[in-house]
Length: 607
Image 1 (cartoon, rainbow, N blue to C red):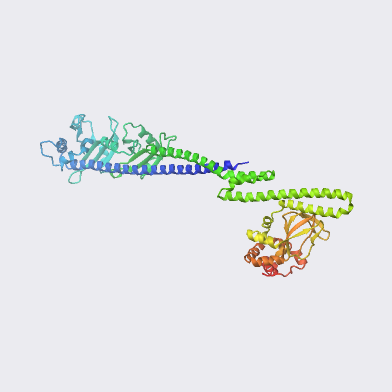
Image 2 (image 1 turned 90 degrees about the vertical axis):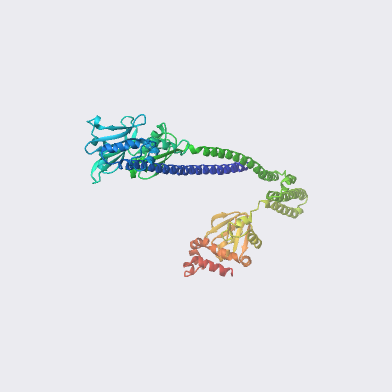
């Protein structure tokens, strides 16, 4: 058997644990959502910063060409001379060339990214200005290499083919590092192409810039071509960058990324490592470049506080469960000690060892349990007193009976007194047995038409009723007799007979009832009923029930509504009711049985 002393503290502890655990889990989930949103916002800001800087950088590079290369006119020697004067630097003593604002251009840090500026004519002439290993600018011509044909170079071909300025990325033949080349077709005043000019740019400035973009403690960013070639990365060691490229390749073709996307990569096959937040941004269409800017943030950079908060929540959960368990034990003890004392008092009454003083401590409480203990104490004292009185009366009866038997053996004329004494003894035993009598109120509530009554109405119904004793073999009514009374068996039992041969159908015992439809509608008795043993019935007559309904007029409607529960029984007995003349074959019962029953009750009880 499960003990309440275990159930209450366990239930309290489980409720607290479930509540705190749910709150902790919800807090953890909310923290992760906040982290995801914060990482996305930080990556978006970093991505826009990188986009803006790349746009500024490439616009400046394009401006270098248009302000310095296309501005120089004349032969290739004239262009080379102009460039040499420009490359001399802003501190030279000579006046500036005809280039617009050359000093201002030369002071731009972006010049450090330019490694070579070159020209080639349609006739194959070639001249270039390139930075030496010592950082100085040197002039190079194709006179030293007559086999060199600039028209076969890729930077020349793309400009001629596209007939417009184009950026192209390729690996340097010596260092194998990515290099950028801007190729521009050159035209004379008559709009005839004279040749192609180009600027070669290393990507060191892009790397330097990416290294300054701080997203998080371990975050990084890089630029990759859709072909998969890494352009530049902010990492000194490209290992993590290469791992992220593998993860991106696992998602699908990089060429399918048409707009900015926010991705997540977890530690799984094909993408090892930590949990990553990744933002991919297409860039370069306006410069004829097909690049992807990738900003990467490890989730662990944000999880320190979350883990700390989670550990704190778990600790608080354990503390709360512990406190709830202790509180549950104390509360259950406070509640259950008086209940157990009352339970023990019941056992003591059954064992005839009850001491009323044992409930004094509980009865002193000012709550519901104290009130219950005081009532129980009074009832117990009364019960014990009655039992003692009954025992004394029974003992006296036994003594009187023994004396009378002795006297009867001496004188037969005392038989009448002996019968009186036995009758008195039977009455005493009946009083003792009254403790085990039925709970009439509880049984009445099982009757369909009474089940909605209040406690006060049930008690009033008991008050208007009466008790009817039956001796063994006595008939209460016979089949087809008029009916107008409700009966319930309080003690004993009855037999139910049906048909002319009086065949016994069944027995009814304590708590069973009959005649509810007779009381409400005046329906005749369909069976014969006879006492199987000495029986006591509780009865309610039609006249008393009429008075009861007049006192409680609101019950008439409730009972009329509940008549629907009797409809199937009446329809089953319809043929018999027609045979005994209770129903006319043309009666309205055939059209609306419920309405007919309600009207019948109204007329029968004069409502």
